[in-house]
Image (cartoon, rainbow, N blue to C red):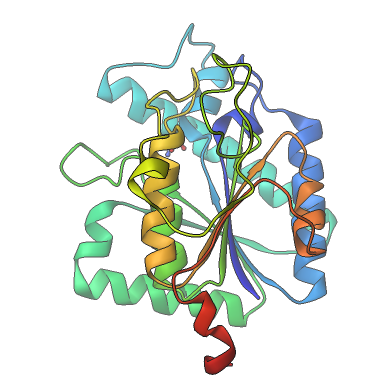
Length: 263
Ligand code: GLU
């Protein structure tokens, strides 16, 4: 199965912006194992800005664009250095692809991206994608990696997008504020009631939130790709998911009922 896994800053880094080594090592080990099993894995990783904040010892996530871009330039190196080193332990080669929203709108660049990604997968490489934050300004950026990962998943015909987040999945209400909130394990369709559950807050270091995740679900499910939100604090949930257990929140692909016919 071709899968895209998106990992958020809050999963990769401690609140200080420094790398959560135990988490990253566990994640890379499990993704390596999924690849060994035969799945084609594409990783969309946030963390460039967050890790730049840690490395530059900034007090908080920068608000001005030049400092954000500088932090991303520093942090992206740290991120890829780490992935390269850890995946190497399991004999997997990684590649870095940095994209902006305009790359998806520009026909030639979009095809180049698709061709490169296909070839990397054929070569057995594990592509790691992030927004090119060092050049992305408001007009050209995607803006958040939930949306970027959904755009990547649909452009390469992935069957499943998994968002690793700092929450177990989609709840009936904000679980930080409402004790009665319960986890929704399956979303057959994105009704207005479901869409209304998207808040707008991300973490202190990251960008996303439930709203961008529901937007990503719209992009994916429309294109026939299912999306799953899992808690990134427990990377082993990935094994449970592939073992067919009900974990996190699963957003069913629109065409999934036709899957049998197309197989
Ligand atoms: N591209 C940003 C980064 O690497 C993250 C965007 C997001 O968290 O959605 O820091």
